[in-house]
Length: 329
Ligand code: HEC
Ligand SMILES: [Cu+2]
Image (tube, rainbow, N blue to C red; front, side):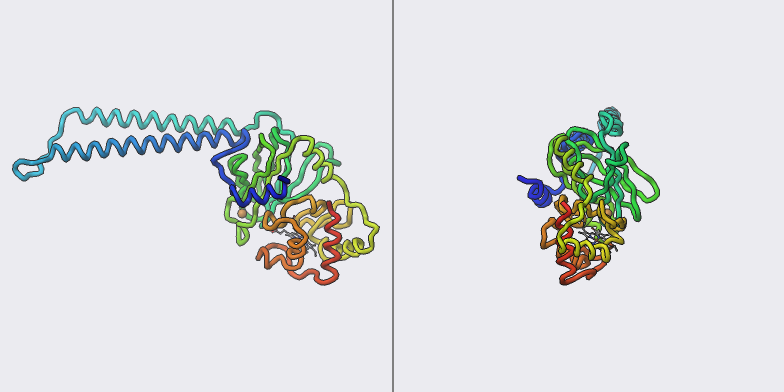
C-alpha cells in the first residue's frame, strides 16, 4: 500500500481513534483511559447490585400486618456508611494518583528529541518549519509532518490568529495552540504509518477542514524526504514551464514561497515541494491533477472562507501555472 492510498484509507476507515495508540506520548494516556473506564464500570455495577439488593430487602421486610408503613431500622447501619466512604475514598485517591503519575510520565520524552518542528497554526492550515542547528538544513512545508519512526520529535506550537489545537490522537494527547505564546509538546511513532490529526478547538468556518497528518517513516526514508525538501526548484528550460512560473510570480508569489525562486510569500503554504504532498488545503482533497486545477481555479467553492481568493487565473494561465506546479517534486 503506498502512502497516498494509506492516507486516504486512514481518513475513511479509522478516523482518529484514541483507543489504540502507537507511541510513548500516547500509550500511558490510553492505558489510563481504559483503566479509568473499567473502574467506572465496576463501580457502577457494584452500586447497582447493592441498590437492587437494598430495594428488594426493603420490600420483603415491609409486608405490614396492620396496613401501616412502619419503618424499622436495624442497628449498625452507620458502619456500612463508613465502609462505603472508605472504599470510595481509596478508589478515588488511587485514580487521582494514577492520573498524576501518567501526566508526569508524558511531560518529557524518553530521550532528547531528534528534531524540532515549529508549527504555525492559521485559519485553516498548518505551517511547518523544520529547524536545525545547521541553518542550511532548515526548511518550510505544510500540513503533512514527516517524522522518523521510534524517535521523539519536539513541536513548538504558535498561532497566528485564533486558538487552535494540535491533536494526533493515535500518537498523543492534544495541545492547544494559543496566540501570543509558544506551547511545547512532543510525539513519537513506534510504527511506520500515516496518523491523521485535526485541529481540535473550533476556530471558525473551516475548522472541520483543518486536518493534518503525521507520516512516520524509517530513519533512512525520513532522511531522504528531508533531503528532498531541502532541494531548490531548478529553473526549467521548457518555455511552457517558464510561462507558468511567470504567471505564478504575478498572481501567487505574494502569498506563496518556492525555494530557489523569487516567490517568498508567507500568507499561504510553502509550495516548494507541493508534489511531495498527498493532500491539498489541510487534508481537504487528495493531491491529484484534477483537484489541483479545481483548487486553483475556485478555492472558495471547495473551502468557503479559505484565505485564498477565487478566480486568480483561468484559461491558458491556469494550465501554465499547473504545469509549473507539477515540476515541484
Ligand atoms: C492572498 C493570498 C493567496 C494568493 C494570492 C494565492 N494563494 Fe494559494 N493559498 C493561500 C492560502 C491561505 C492557502 C491555504 C488555504 C487553506 O488550506 O485553508 C493556499 C493554498 C494553496 C494551495 C494548496 C497548498 C497545500 O499544500 O495545501 C495551492 C496549490 C495554492 N494555494 C496555489 C496557489 C496558486 C497557483 C496561486 C496563484 C494563481 C495562489 N495559490 C494564490 C493563499 C493565497
Ligand atoms: Cu480549528
